[in-house]
Image (cartoon, rainbow, N blue to C red; front, side):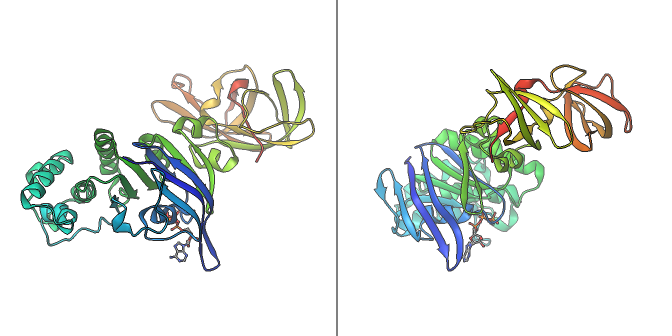
Length: 356
Ligand code: ATP
């Protein structure tokens, strides 16, 4: 397992900017995910690591060795694509063995390695099956086996689950994570699905329009987003533009144009946020930040929408002309109806301040 270091990399396609001044360090053995909407530069970055694209400027290093312009086949990487790119008329074993045959390994060694990796991906009985006789999930595992059998220093996965249905996607997510931690291979995973990113990754890089918006653990990205893009892209939130009306010791008071006044704590700030009285600030309130009844930051409103999920009651509440999403965990005993008045509160520690 090797580290991957991307230093100040920009990739242009003519006038189109694919990625801009990207810096990134993936640690040996880490499961690292590129997350962001379509067109944000995830695949472009992955392709520069694979060697299919060369950066316009900047460098790529594996374990400190400059690989910026090294051919893909000299990088010892395993890759799994969205469409698997398997040979449909060949058997499972022939597909898995492909990379080893290219490397001209002895037959006995190929057999041994293929058997082992087929077991690892739970396809022990399927060696002689043709690819076009397998389910999508099984094909996906063959693609993973083929990438892993060469014992890559780095495993690159580009939206590997997008062709699977929801249930299979969830199962395969767990499988990929299990296999990755068993082998300890440095893994870079591309997805636009935040649940995949949050559940599988050691760290996540959130991207937008060719730029890095934040790099952090799933917990950091969720609980301490650096900016509005990350706060709204990951999970759900109520994002309010507010004015700072006072700062007293720990307590920051903010007011919305609709008259809503809230009190937060100076501990609940993204890095680099310095609230100033009279200044504009963005307040992120997760739906689960609300609690039932009155308290800190009491919110009185009218219910616009309500649903009971078992675990929670989810409300859309109209407050001073603004709609807020609230989720009351275990709130099933006293569910109100659309049009009813409701009183909830937001503990001050649950308000989160952002500068941009
Ligand atoms: P998706 O999730 O849709 O695959 P992505 O985040 O992987 O998106 P990229 O494929 O990296 O995004 O694309 C980043 C930007 O670079 C986009 O604006 C895209 O149109 C552009 N781009 C990517 N590849 C090329 C290319 N070969 N030629 C021209 N422009 C390209």
